[in-house]
Image 1 (cartoon, one colour):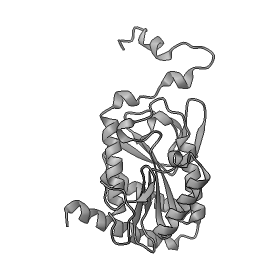
Image 2 (cartoon, one colour):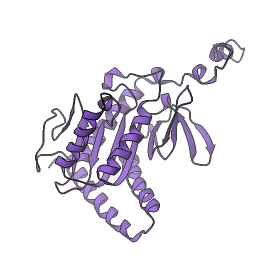
Image 3 (cartoon, helix red, strand yellow):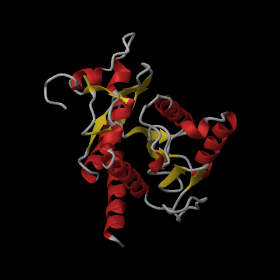
Length: 264
């Protein structure tokens, strides 16, 4: 087995084993926090240091719309954030690379909750999107569940939502990752329609046993986003004027640049 494949197979087993020890925790909030920390640690140890992996936070746009709490926020080091106190931050939508929602178990009820969180984030208005290079037209969003239902049941829940809403596909997660289920670990990715994927270059209906390690999907997806962002830093700047302009149409950036502090 290739080293990368071997690494992610071992890591998946480690995450599952560590997650099982959380049964000793009786408080559901603490269990959720422990699982968020587990995923956060995996991301920070395997992906580029170009990004901070914040546990919790809220996104907002220049129209004062808010996302509500998001479990993990990927925030490039080149981007500003609004620090409230300690580790409590607000993030302008243009400064965030991706959002992640963590679930202990992804049954139908929790799937709908995750969809709601994702929708609120993707409805935020960004001056810097779409990123056509990534074929994503709003903030990339991922749902990761430590336990889930069978592939067929999860797909059926998604199909039901597609039939209810015409905007469902545009506003739903780009990746849904299940680390453990009756069918084992599996990934659902968003293309023209939701379909199971076992090959990163193809999107087809998968059967049990024919599936790529979901952590490899996660790693590949985020690595691509990070590379796109880091190579286009100038195009991913926070539009400060959009966030500061009230009735006065003065361009704050232009005013700063016209001073004699050596910026131009």
